[in-house]
Image 1 (cartoon, rainbow, N blue to C red):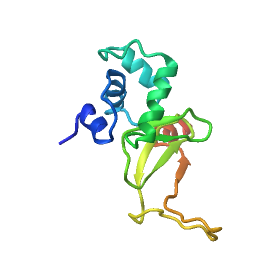
Image 2 (image 1 turned 135 degrees about the horizontal axis):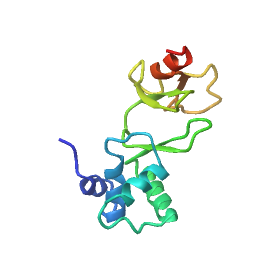
Image 3 (image 1 turned 60 degrees about the vertical axis):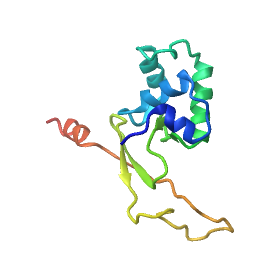
Image 4 (image 1 turned 90 degrees about the horizontal axis):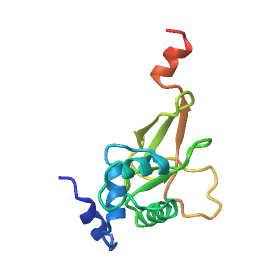
Length: 145
C-alpha cells in the first residue's frame, strides 16, 4: 500500500503543508521531472499550492531532498530532475536523442555497485552511474524508419 504524501512527510518529521503534499503528489507517476514540469502540474490543479512562488518551489524541493523523500539527479546537459524512488541502489539510462530517462536496478544489488581502483581514504557508500545511448525510438528515427 502506498503511503499518502502527508504520511510520508510526517514519517520524516516534516510539517504536512499543502505545498509539500502537492509536490510529492505531482511526482507520483512522473519520475525524473524537472522543477518546471512539477510547477506546471501543481499549477494545473493542486489545491492550496497554486500560489507557490518559484523560490518557494525550489525551497520545498530542497527540503524534500534533504529529508530523503525525493532524489535529485543531474544528468550532464540536462536540467536537474526529481524522483520519488529513494532508498534503493538504482541508476539511470539517458537517451542522447530525446532525453528520456529510465531507471536501472543495481547490477550487484548492494551499494556502492562499483569500487574505484583507489579509495583515497574515503569510506565509499554509493556510486552514481549514468549510462548514455539512444532509446529504441531514437534509434529507429536515426535509421530513417
